[in-house]
Image 1 (spheres, rainbow, N blue to C red):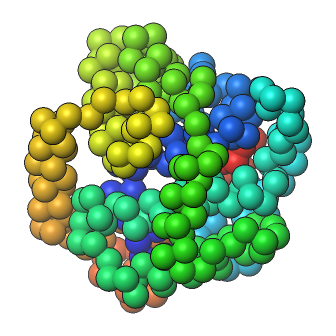
Image 2 (tube, one colour):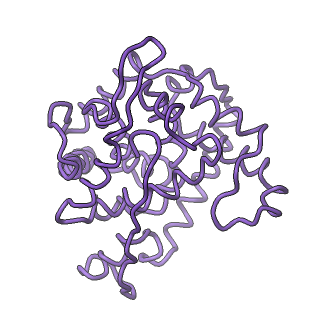
Length: 281
C-alpha cells in the first residue's frame, strides 16, 4: 500500500470511488443533507484526497483519527425514515473498501495486474490502514476473494441509483459546476462541457457491467474499444516515466527517503486540516 497507494493512475479513478461511495444510500443522503458537493463537486475531492493519501503514511494514526472525528456530526434520516450516521462501521467500511479496491483496479485497467498474492497483501494492508481510524473491526475483510464477494453483495443488496449519483453522472453534463482550483473561471466557461463529458465518460468506463446496470448507464462496444485504446496509451506512457514521476506526494518522497525508489527527496508539505461535508471523506 505504501507504494501503490500513491500511484498517479489512482487519479483516473477519483470518479469511480466517488460514484461507488455515493451509491450507498447513507453516503448519498449525507451529501444531500450536509454537503456543498452540488455547488462545488471538485472541491470535495481537492480537500479530502491529500489527507486520505497522507493517512496511509501516518505511523501514529493521528491523521486517521482526525479524519474520523470530522464525521461525528454527520447524521440524519434516509428517505424511508431509517437513521444513518457516517461513523456507522459498515458505512465507513464501504467507503474505505472502495479506496482499497481502487489501488487494485488502477493496475487492472491502466497498469500491470497484481498477482493474487499481491492483491491479498494490499487488502491486508488496507486493514492496517483501517485500524488507524480506530473504528470497529466488525465489518473488516482481510483477503481479496472475500473483498470481491463483499463488493458483489453490496451491488446486489445495497447500492442504488440516487440523486447524488445522478448529479455526478448526468446533471453535471448540462449544468455548469464551479471550476476546479487553479482553473480560471474564464477558461472553465469555455472548456467545462467537453471536460465534464470526458471525465464522466472515463468514470463510466471504470465501472463494471453490474454497476452500470444499477445506474442505467449506456456503455457500447465502441465505448469499450475506445477506453481500451486510451488505457493502453496510459500503460505505455507509465513504463517510460522516471520511477519517481509515477507517484504522488507524500508517497513519492517517503519512498525515496526509505530507499524504495530513486529520485530527489523533498520534505512532504504539511497537510492542512479541512472540515468535510458529507460522509465519509
